Image (cartoon, rainbow, N blue to C red; front, side, top):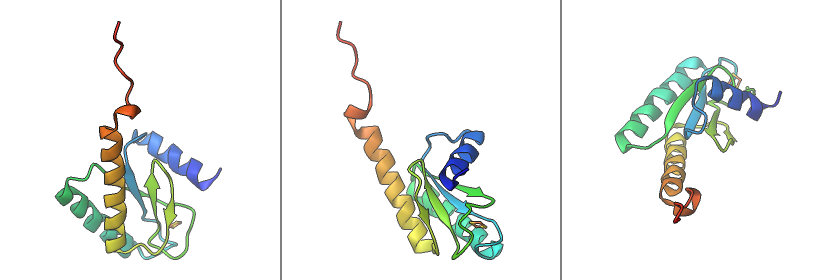
Length: 115
Ligand code: FES
């Protein structure tokens, strides 16, 4: 099973199907857990302070396992290595901008029936 498929399965299991999220690996092979846990806490605080419609989720391993902290964006999955706090904040901002654009774009929602 591929990395993206595993991540999708993990997110569906947690009922986070389409919610924009930054998923942070808290496994022990890519970086020390204290480092990834600190990144999660800082990034969650940042997202809450900004009111960003983005979850900061954790996963045991993203199957990259090198050059951590490793994070992935969701639902459009991209993997990032060596993510520090400023970079995580930029990713949260990008995910929030995408989520807001989708929410405001009328072409994304079905048009009402006029009959
Ligand atoms: S332990 Fe972090 S990607 Fe595998």
